[in-house]
Length: 621
Image 1 (cartoon, rainbow, N blue to C red):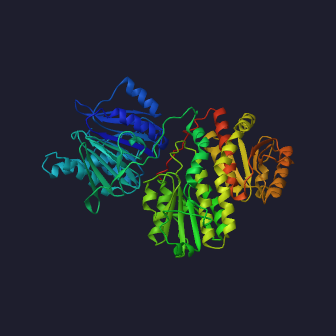
Image 2 (cartoon, rainbow, N blue to C red):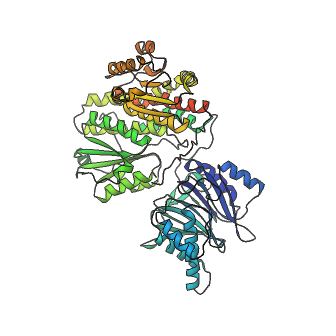
Image 3 (cartoon, rainbow, N blue to C red):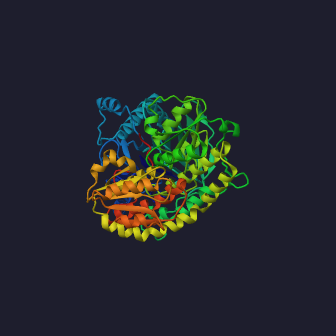
């Protein structure tokens, strides 16, 4: 997982490369580097073990110039986060520079063969193997063409090297002897080419291109782009040269301005009234008491014939799928199974012909989810996606789907994407319900409740002051338990994940009733239990579970309705939220849990937006 940028044109490349890496840093921030072709000749490289800000400081001390350049920010897979392992990597005796995202599964055998030929390796990465392999293929291609050194030798070298790779890659290559050439290629890892006037750009996603160009080309798997300052050619492994599909860059752009917020995560928490409104906009059909979607690409008759739904995702998206299971089964009476995408791709579950599979993903690039959908699609089943990023790999490869319209989410810990996913899943449950047994009156009630969501989330944010006080009391705890039932069991899982992600505190989520079957052994005076206990069908049951924890001396933090006096008198601390129907409680209850993890992380001195060992877009297995 990493971020890649590239530039070819007439201007100094470094300003774009640094700006692009800053926008891509959420994809990886263990190390960073830039390589340019110097005006005097030869490849210059500056790399650091650390953040893009450290790279920028290094470049301030010793500038790199040149109108051809590539950059990279890394999330370590093979080899620790060191300067030697940072990209870009040099191939051969300085004949090329390469930045790579992905995992090369056969790198060890390739490395052994290259070492036997005399190639010396400085890193532990699989990526340096690719750089030397291309250099070796280039030497052979140039020899076959009697040493004419044409650009075609570089193209053929990359093509030959790629044919030997097994695994995934998004890569960009620049050659020492070709001052007007970048070569980009992808297989399983995203790359976008930005089309300019007498200059061209490459990036892992569209965010670095904003403000530089409005025209883009999404590379597909097994495509290779030959990029010159005034020309772009796209080649396919099997089809040869193809006509590139130039698209307009979406208006959904990255706003790098924190607008007064201390972190992107906090900004995105406070954007949720707007992001939920955007998810709802134009999708509620009051006349027919249902929801409507334009991209499912199935007829009403086909949708009515669905007998089973599989929801798959990873991390936060898997938690939203669990809520979706409750929603769809209750409102539409369709059996739903939730699968980890990382497991589904390697299983061979029986899937009937009248089953559809939804992949849920914020980035649209999650490698496990993409592979799971491909496997299901290969077997002839219809695939749909719930996705936030227009033009992403999953959005393009699924048979249909629904965009979240949450806007860019920069903070690694997902917040507004989660509540937008739940909002869309609620509408899907309404839609499928109305195709079946759900009455017109019930549909109208659900629509009314959905319409109230943005204002209720706005009101929920008023709990921030309560959350700060609670965070100060419990920031030194080393373990947390998160407990809920029914719709709020997945909410408990999500709350625990948020705390783990950004504060590095061990936390576990459980169905509250399961405590007495083992986890209650963890309860002591140093372990806070966060109970999600708003009014609803299981309120009395959760209250009993709360009392079991209190009886054993465990401190209790409770998420309660505003007018709840019973729990308020029992709990050590309460966070109040507006009252709402059971099936929408996870959306509202998630807000204080997000704020709690944020405030505790701040008090512990953690980097909220860039937590250790994590990256936003998980593009490797």
